[in-house]
Figure 1 (cartoon, helix red, strand yellow):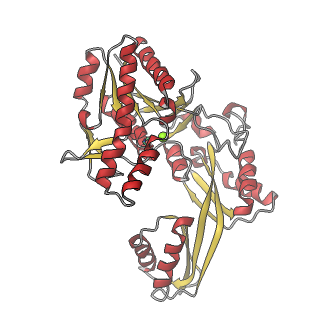
Figure 2 (cartoon, helix red, strand yellow; figure 1 turned 30 degrees about the horizontal axis):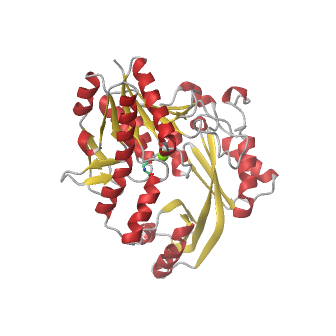
Figure 3 (cartoon, rainbow, N blue to C red; figure 1 turned 135 degrees about the horizontal axis):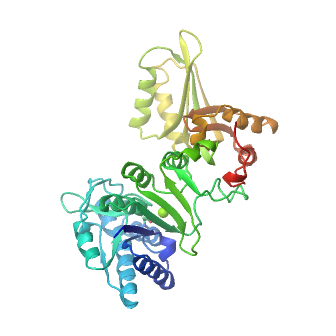
Length: 413
Ligand code: ASP
Ligand code: MG
């Protein structure tokens, strides 16, 4: 019998009615001939509430204790789900992450899964149970409870699917699937039928809050197709899979806009070995997360280095740069606050020319200045002034016809 893993996010189990609906869905999947494993998140906003509780007794709580506390949210959900299923006359059992030996490293609050022992779950599945597993948590080698980072239940689910040899993982959430653009900004965004792991990873790194990134890495590595869909209806959602040939015919799958960014430029640093290493070593030591980096030489002696950081890291980054600018003989530092990054992502750009041009022209037509450009194999990003960000984003979405389903777009040359 095939094994199906279903994951229910916090909004899909927020109250008794929704828990019962999730329970029914699991039962139906079992009746359709699957062995069913369900991973669940904490109900509603419970994780946030638990964090607030912790801060009330200690503004700086030990991370180990945070994990002890936060893991209880998911434990409540799975026991309630199992009770609901039993109440409907079917066999169900719930487990914590530790009970199914979801082994992680010991980095509390952001642990990484090392291994999962599927035997406990398989035994129960073979006895006809629907098995519920608390998401977001595991255990280190010493038996301490760990959590996987916010949004980590996605990763629990896909990792479990991989460990159990399941080829599908359904992610039930409060949206219909993954959209070509942020529908709050670009109203005509449409749901994608499918998207590749690489594209989703790229979109996630651009701040599109779709899925926990580690879950996509697991899916890609272990060949688990992830189906993101609504818990409120029966509609097909979006399939996240390996790249298939049809995807090549799509120039751009999705677009994002990231605000809250600052660009820092160091003009005229020494153009010789070790300079960038020195700059970024100091930024790393000060725990500044750097997004895009651009370096170009402007003469045989001098180079310009610029990079973007999130606004919250701006002050630290500036201090770091002030500390070391003398060492690298930087002439001037230019800080550009209030910048936004508009990006498009698509595997089709590997094999088509003119993609960047479509984007640049859309911005040029609106007389929007591009402050910097960065690219990867499947991404193009433009920095623009924050005041023009929304206009720029919409123009780019329209230029790539992200308001249309793939079949209705003009065929790329
Ligand atoms: N409950 C956790 C959170 O809110 C994990 C999850 O929902 O995936 O981040
Ligand atoms: Mg989530």
